[in-house]
Length: 309
Image (cartoon, rainbow, N blue to C red; front, top):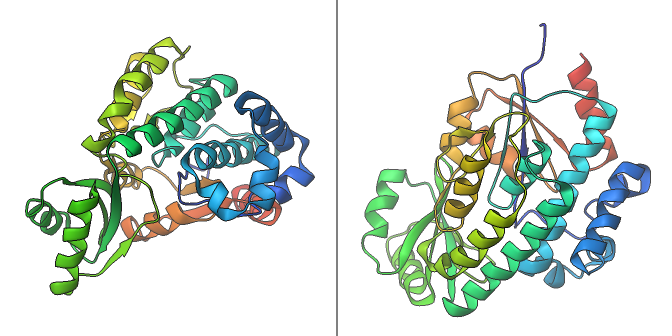
């Protein structure tokens, strides 16, 4: 088949589970180094929280974002160590976008983790200022959703994840009214276990402090294109990266657009990090695309085996 065309993707908050990363940590020094250095930079024990939980603690925004980032980036380092290749592109969902830029060497690991840690704190502060919630609406088109959103004050599109799976975020009252409306109109939805309305204008209090940190960070040109959440388009230079990360926090995640943009140009997408949430979404967007993942030693070996065919 010649040279394999590979893209890589990194998950965000919501993919965490107790025990994540343990297998790779025990088997690969290069993975363990990420956890150990990460614990030092962030001032809490990533290893203990990932391996032992409890899940309630691991799910807290400030803990979760750092831990999911560490697992995703550690998995990338292990894969590169065992099977070096340059992907055609990278993308990440929400927090995962930071992992993608780190894999593309736009940030150093230390700078990325510092930014992720501060981003999580600013997002948490914003949820205290603007409490809210999120629900995933199932089985409706984007046009349907745009009509529904207009019926409610303080409700916005947050993640365009897959055909028939679009997440809305909004004020506590807005989400309560929307849920009631869905019940009355037999619209299927799932309430998400989150503390705020991420990727909506309710995150506005986080914009200024985060922008300041992004502007102060040392950001290089990407080694390969990274698709930005806010636009679903590839970017490579440092000004574009700064703009993308600032816009991302209050803009919907354009996951469908991202996968639609790349699906005809690649053979495989490898998901690096806990669970296979993104692989599931990709299957809905591009059923013919082969997805692989690296979450533990066995999935790593399976992925490498297929890559070597």
